[in-house]
Image (tube, rainbow, N blue to C red; front, side):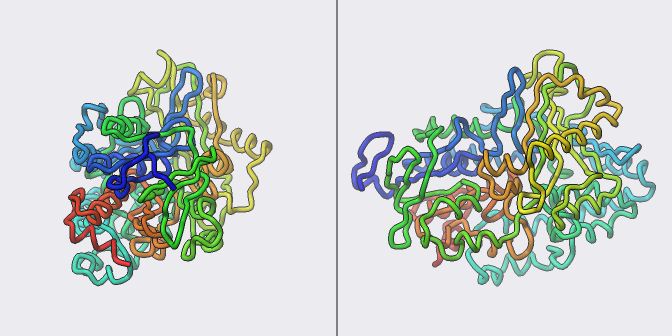
Length: 524
């Protein structure tokens, strides 16, 4: 099989530096950008007509939306990625810090979250007298835990022997692995609503706070410590900016160009078969496609052993999301991020995450970026995004036309009950619904599990699919389905870890890791 890059036949000395990236989501674009900056010949293949995947741009007439993630935290990680590639993030994007970070609504009461410790303590004490001290203790103890855990999220895990390493042994007593997120927060807050206010972030992992490992209290800590930001134009602009840098480094980006199969010979990934019938050889393949979908569809029968389609079907997956994107013909007087809690929040989350039931009394989230960003809707109008956590398609509910329409009406009734959104139904100019079935069929998300593999202890670190794919040599993973996990900051970290391992293998300088640490993930 001849090897081509950008239509040009490559000379033998260049063959070892050729890399194909399957999928132009945030992880795929990040790894492509990093590798291109080290002189690799990188081709990215994206099935859709634009970059981003779940973090892509959605346009409905004159209205623009983030398709998926809207919370951007820890932008310094993104700054690092751009700097490694020789670029300046802030020349590509304008980031605006949000204050308040978000508005939390509990029936008739609400809490505005800020990352100022003094102001947050005041607000908590006003909301629940005496709980402000618990907040300060939470921030102090979580800071210490995060310092121990962060290094583990920034390097590869290759097997159970990694748990015997010094940094892991030092961190383990701090990780609260025997607790759940909810039980940890009960140590700091008397008011149950505050426990919810600092645990709803477990939904980023598609899990209930009552089952999510206690280590993940760091999610709310990171928000309160580092703040939340909005990239003007939308969070999808982070992907478009990486694509621009990648192309500037000579990378080849192919959109509307799906991959049908990863070719494997003698347990080595050797190339791609594209959906258009073209076959291309590469030295390395990096998979950024949804992990469950990739393992189930992108390999020939018998190519995979540890992650065969049957075994992948038995893994545990996150919940999904019912989405309602609405172009509204008036200004909406809401904050940027708004979280509305169900009356019985525990019942709601356990029905969704444990029992696979669509709740009658559900929590929901409303994103109103037009209050800050005038680029997303026409003057005097708003792009409104509503997300309701629901079970993935592994549950019994069938999202047909009737059930989808009925649930839409339930969502709109909930919105209409909020004073800021009264009359919203008549003000909708255009809308789009995305159900778990749509995530599965249109964006190739396995079981519509929008937050990827669950983050239970049996699917974390060494027990999560490795950045160096175990089932095929010269095949690598990035994205939410590999270490360190789902969520934009950890997806970016997965790309940095994978690129560092590849660079270390080839005698090139890794990205923020020592060569010896990067090489730990290269063991058989």
